[in-house]
Length: 167
Image (cartoon, rainbow, N blue to C red; front, side, top):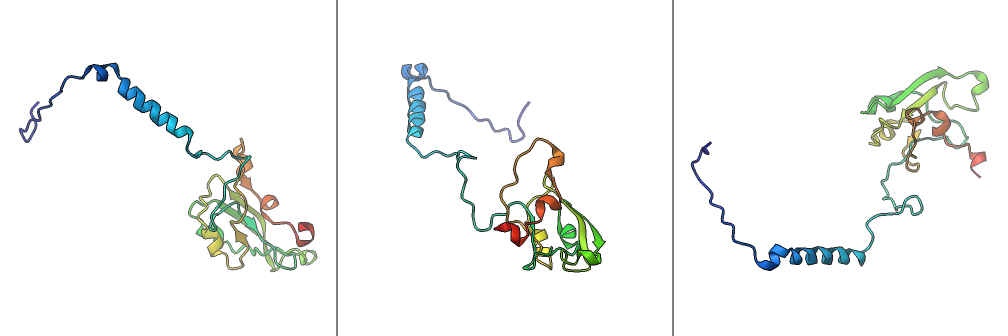
């Protein structure tokens, strides 16, 4: 089949020399590169024995914060779930009872609060959308696991410990 431009490119192949046919220069060059890597700094980090240093704007695992009195800050307004582009956050709101005044700040609270860490893209929009500063991405790296159900984090894993237990 002819090309549209009718231009032909002539390729010239010059014959290989004896050393090039033996591939010795190529082998020597490859060995030189390999040996030079022995004296360079390692590119890998031996995790988990050695932990990498993170930048100041690192986003780790989510945490639901408490106020200075030990009450949960989250008022189940749903802005974090609405702002999440991956739709990883789900919550169910409930009304606070009189005997629960020491646990929650407002009359409405999140009875269930779940984040699917497999869907989360760690964009930080939930953190920015929260008017009560209840959610932060300030935790460690999300640990590896084998089951999908273990990546759905509820309030048991997300709410930080009360002030008395932190000591």
